[in-house]
Length: 453
Image (cartoon, rainbow, N blue to C red; front, side, top):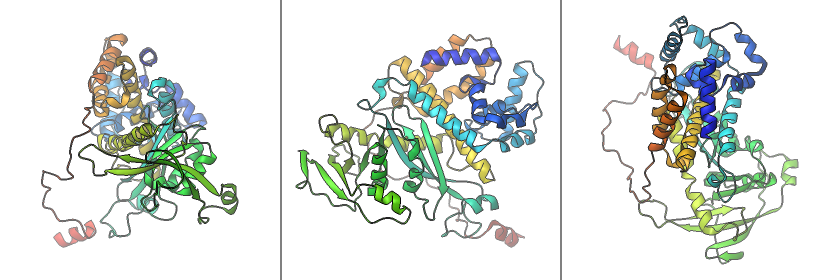
């Protein structure tokens, strides 16, 4: 993996591409764009340049278009080229023309490539695990965004922000984003499980889905089983558990049968009849002995029925790793500042999300290469440390520093930032720093301006 990274850096420097070309080549970008790339013929902002500048904007601490264009000017000057205009209009126009499907293709390709190149010992008992979780994202309060992603009905007009729901499928081995679904925050078929059903086609036979109890419905499990996809999911608190029943496999480990419920409104009669009348599932009780955890015991439901191939202890360890999805979402929303977006139209918002995900995958690609070279797992390396390293060392590609020296410095620096193992640390849900004593907005901003006048 580190050898492929060094080769990509050498090719990018030889072809004179922007710094991010060493992580995402022009050929891969043009392949994702297809015939749409001809709209940029003759522009400074070609598809590749636009994507590279967009990536630098999403991965920077500033996130402004002005800062992104300034970095492009600096790169052109360092390569003896004429500087482009510092006005952001041309760059924003080029971003507007980016097809949404091209961005999603780049998300899937970059995420899948890292996992395909990962060594087998990163897998869980030889299985590829997909961790699924969802969250919400806000965006600027514009009429266009409000029309497509309306704010919660409990908020007064002009006092809230448009909000969308996002469901992400992560690779547990590499931590990359494999697929994503977006939807409105509220309304029919906008829940996390409904959005995840739209991503079922991207799952392969033999995959294992790791998720929380929100995805533990009978039909959610049955639809995945229909695709020969296994699940490891926390059991919903509404379902009763009695380990005195069923086929006993071990201590608090047994097989049970779930009967098919009535057909839900969202499912067609043909699809309902195609599903089996019962599901044979395995229930495992997990006891949490570590201090600091709010949950002391939980029930995990799985379709991995063989207790010899998949011991209860391994099931418990795997479910604990579900927390990696929460940490990955934190890296996206907090470290990459994707919790509140900046674009003012839905089309640009969706592309902004995709570019954040592509940038996230590229950082994960570097973390995987560094982990391979250092002989450790990628989930033990700090994402924020990797981001800081690449943002500060990418400009050095414009110097006379050799490719081997640059790659060695980058991979060594990334591998140095190891995440601390603190399983027994107690973190109370309180804040020490007091917030500013400002009132919350409870009427549109224009009303405040009228009152002040």
